[in-house]
Image (tube, rainbow, N blue to C red; front, side, top):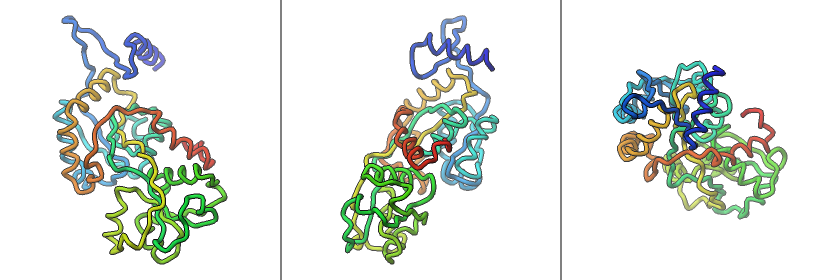
Length: 296
């Protein structure tokens, strides 16, 4: 393992780039790509083989054609289960949300291949239309409905917005995790505010039979970090670089295949970009200020 790491870093330095291309020249002077015979593919927020096939079946086969490598699904029980699966080489590539990426990067040293930027991916803070609350700072001492622990748009990013407004996440407000029932709780007056992703807001109101006029968005945060496809660091670095290049080159086909599933309409209008680890520092900061830095 030490010899492998030494070789990797030496080649990384020699290549003089951040993609970590580990290439060897063959007799014709072309780079030889060290490709595996097959890849195991997981999605952190999808449980069960049936759901994977329903939401990512066409994406998998399209990616298989683009990479020219056989790809098989690997279901994970929960978002954090992908990390030990990467470490044990049970899975090779993982599609993860921003907060899950940090776990995979910290615990399994996963390498980002590409990111999928969503055009309308912001955290918003919602109150009742008749509420006197107009500013985030006025949520001190209030109860806020959020989605679930670790959700980027429904927990971590809203918490960052409140921190930036001068509130202490440990003492200044109460969070209740209500998944998509936060709108109903807000309507009934059980909570004072509701944090949700902008691209889910109207869909949730519609599914719950609620009217947009009964609510008021008091704050919309900046564009959130992108979802990421990461690779096991046990794959050859020249193969990871080749995957990255092919996925960016054929991004139109990949995005079209992703959007065939109803569950993936959040990616409509999105695009495939290079992943930048620094974009995720906002989430790291939230974990630190919540006193949960050790989680990463």
